[in-house]
Length: 404
Image (cartoon, rainbow, N blue to C red):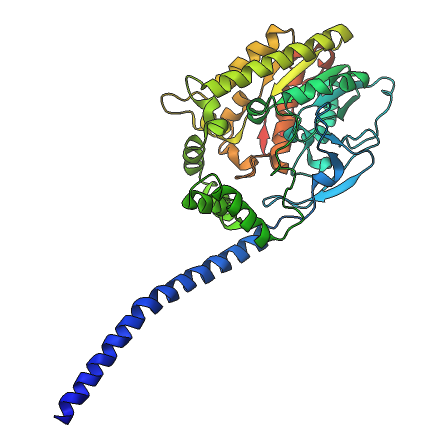
């Protein structure tokens, strides 16, 4: 009898333990997941750190009449997740030109360049940018003294270029070099950055920013969508994509699966969104090319492709309904219809294996090595006869292991 009671007590004890386990085990599992996720995020934040300061300290971000512009004689520093810590120094005219603004020196062929972040050399040091490297390359090929004054600016998409184009012409260029990228078309009508881009949460710590983003997203979207949005903004997501996108096939698939604003320019036929953006570009091109014509200054628009386009043409194949050359062809028609000249760098990437390695995998801007490649291509195209003032000897330039 005593033994039976003992067995009953042990059975009841096991039942109680089983009930607790059903509560404790999920909690232990959840706690372990949270600890692992927190540890992974900490590692990612060390490997892909970002600065608390940025270009917002050196720019005017709220003037719709000019678009974003640099604060004269200002210096700031910015580190994005995939880049080094970069100095952003603006001269007395508010340009990241690597030189002071002023009258053109005698016997110098002056190019004034305009465009947005890629043209400004975002994510790389000024001396590593193609704006800094191109003059020497052109001088070598033409045998004349060439100067490039860079008036490009972050968020300087096509309409912003028209707002500041009189300033471009005031620099007395022999040639205006207008740099276009897929982003310039996708955001053609943008003049000022969004709230998020201006660093809405820059004065808050990481935890506060997470909660603010989650709160904002929950007001309009489901809980899972909000959580997914916060995760995609995490440093862990950046780290995972950074390494996964180094696979060419995964990178191309991920890009084609992204939103229309990111990949729609590759699809045939193009979406209504991209049709409307190209119409904006057409209007802006007409405005600035008319001003340049009146001033007697030639305009060359150079199309710099995005990494997914370069990958496709390098591989030499793409699926039905995709055309990596579609945007280039339409931009050429727009620019030339208003009297400008157009150069397209995309065909030059066909001979480069894995050209996407010359771009930051997630950020999409060219790396320092990418700027060397772009320098080589721009020098080749600009001295090919498209600009009579830059004709000359055609000595070969070597860039990033590729003789062009």
